Length: 395
Image 1 (tube, helix red, strand yellow):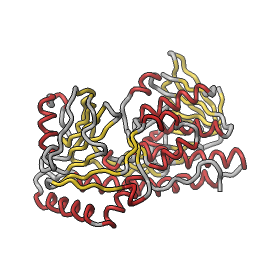
Image 2 (tube, rainbow, N blue to C red):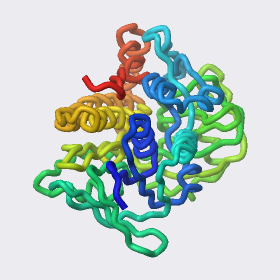
Image 3 (cartoon, rainbow, N blue to C red):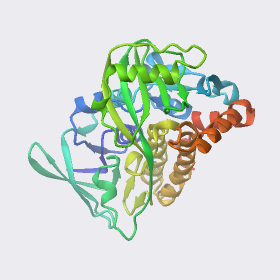
């Protein structure tokens, strides 16, 4: 089989790239190791920046999102027994939207299949090659048979554990990694949201986050030890921790309900340089990981793809390669901004075990951010997202 752009991974990055290329008449094939059902049901990120929402609307993918998404004008920061609201819309004119990653995946899969797009599920990519020359290929196994996909270019959108990044030669690859000394215990709650907006809580016992996935499903997180086992957390223990960490702030009452999908997520930051080697490009989690405190993971994937689609359009429509050459530097500028913001939010909100100095410093920092318009604006601008350049028309 042959195509113009071979895409590995049917997450938001790979699916959106295929959709954008289709809109400009550029052919692609997506190889996905998991089943369609798995892709459409796995719970991941849920917050969209204003630019991501605008891009989805601009490309015809926003109908269900506009009906079902929860649009927020701000967030709350809780600390030292106080609740402080950051009014994102008033400070920046922008908003954020809650719409689960799995819902975006459903929407784009439906759009691609309706348009005759080629997505091969349960196709395990085994090798990427030829990308340092002019004949890239992907070998994959589907239904027990090995196949080869020849293409002009490869887009590695196969996540942190995929084969794309691993195929970069060692003398070219450079990775930046940071492991955080704590993790998040996350869960879904079948209950009406506790509040209308996200609540970030700094508490001496540990960070807590309230968010939501819909008007009937909430998503909760607790800071735990990095080697914590989710099996150690009974429902009673979880609710006790949430009531202590969140419920002590101005009488906030935590909505309770049945818990599900309880799991521990380690916190890490990772960046790959470069994001392009020859005729292979990395996008999304295959190129970078951010701690979820800043809600940047899915939005960075969308930003990468908007830059990459623009480069492909310039090449196939105008025979230009300059945007290919600029791809890695363009994306990494935004990636490092997002890394800084995610690190800053994470460092400010998570108490440091055994360090009274750091914990008092964090309270002072939160006080400074929430009592200063300049500090609140910095948070609001980064949280709601840096502007996205147009993906459609190459400069």
